[in-house]
Amino acid sequence: MIKNLKIALFSVGLITAGGVIAAAPILSTDVVAAKLDSPWDMSFLKDGTMFFTEKCKGLSVRTPSGAINKLHGMTGTTGYASASADLFCDGQAGMMGVEVDPDFTKNRYLFVYSSSNLNNKQVNRVMRFKVGNDFKSVSDRTDIVSDIGYKPKASKHPFGGPGAHNGGRIRFSPADGFLYVTTGDNHLGIGPQSPTIIAGKVLRIDRDGKAAADNKPPAGFDFRIYTYGHRNPQGIAFRPGDNRPFTAENGPWHSDEVTALENGGNAGWDPRPNMAGRKDCPDDYCGYSPNQMGAMDPKERSAFMSMTDLKTYPKAMKPAWNNNGLSQGMFCNTFLSGAKWKDWNGQMVVGYAGIGIHGTPVGNRLEVLKISSDGLKATKTDVSWPTATGRFRACTLGPDGNLYVALEDQGNIIRVTPQ
Image 1 (spheres, rainbow, N blue to C red):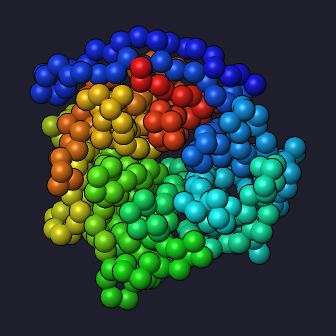
Image 2: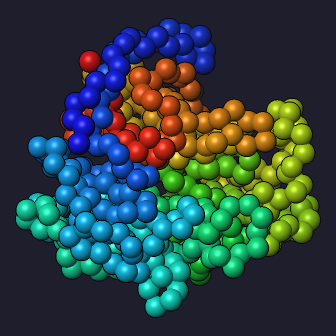
């Protein structure tokens, strides 16, 4: 176990997109959990207790003393206090999001998003557990959502294996107390715009899995749906001050997006064939369709299918940021909060886990975005973060006001502290 291993300490010089020199904090980093197997998400109690998931292993907790207790494993794992044989890891799927109940001190509830083959049917589930008083076990598994889509092995689409576009981030809103659940489109062309298929959606539910009473999906839609028309949102965060939810979403070879959500809103992704002048696509899914595979010259990208199709859906939610028209695996997001973050106070951090596709630069970085009050525009700050490079799978603000990030390929969870 590595505790307080100092990696770097230096002043960050930065220039905004407008060329203005901004005041930035001095950052230091240390590793708080190491030698993990694909760490995917973290959630904290006020005393610094950190629950975290490893995609192909299970759920664990790091106590304030630095001790790690393995709580609940997946099929084939060992060393966990308990396990569920139906939980599995395959491709992009596995144990993903984790979130502590805001009323944890009263109910000791913890929520987990994971792939499951219970009853021989592959789906994604949101499960509620009760954490033991000694933080060494969980019990009383209750599946509050059991019908989130999953891309099966039988899919004939040439890109992405089983479990592709799996969504998986879960977060409680500090404003309304509801749990928001991001779900990917699973390479299912009809999913994002479907009123009943839980794929390409953001759900807004209570701790029992019931829809929030004031959800406003279109007529005929599953009432749990808060927004629809998504591709693969794998980050969701709430802006300090107004607590507005923002997603971070993977794009179709271009246009990763950050979007301010509106109750009942359409994110404008519709990968069905024969839509908007498109032709047939592999496996009836145009998310990587051949008619997007032209030259990657930025001047020609406007001819590609946009993730937010405002031509077909003119009332769709408009993104605040589209990563300059590049797809680099935007994965996680969180808002920085506190005076010690200086000019970054109240701004969003986004993390990338891309591997570089068709000539686009490799992702694997963190960026700071200053988003306008109306949520429709963003300005990027280029930052040299004092962290090892890698695939950023999680980024969240801890109760100490520091930023915590998970690097999948490094196997580390790192604390970034502004001085």
